[in-house]
Length: 265
Image (cartoon, rainbow, N blue to C red):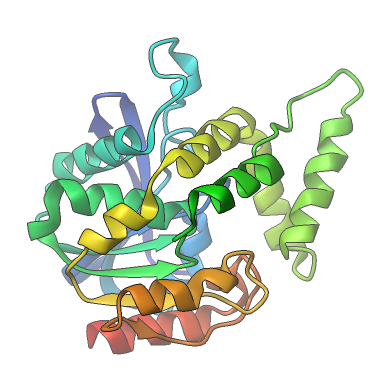
């Protein structure tokens, strides 16, 4: 396992938990998918020894504060999520950095870039989300229903089977970890997906000017949009990777190798 230290960063919404890979140089900020946590980057960070990295649990996930706990925050927008992460980055003294986002993490990365583009040295997107409005609505209908606790515990089996369909079932430990994360985030999952489908990813993506690395496994639900993202940014680099919707877990060697080559570290 990587040399992980854990801590909390302050933001205006509450405290954001992070997993810090102890190292040197320009730090890498990792942002996970819905409904995972920063733990999804442990295997990648393990393959980036001595590289300073911060994998945040975004609001509503992992050990970070839950917007659902406050009636004033219980439906955060994507700009709000980006603002909270930017405040957390500032609160622990990160200046210039590279940013790596996976699925929802790519959406939050765009919001962070929109706020502090001058401090972001590069962006890596695993499963970018350059969807049309109609496509966003299709995803909204498919992925926004909450897995809420019920008296019979049926949600437990529903959640377990849902994750198997996304690609965790070949690794029982991964499946269990994602199950725990998803159960914890049963409110955050629905809230954050709503923010994802409301975001105009394309408009923000077109404004991005930093070096860009793109990846997605062929069986990732967002793989059909990888080529679109590349054509929108012809200067971007595309690297092959495997692993369904869990590339950092299923294919950490290729994921880490692509990041190392891209960043020349």
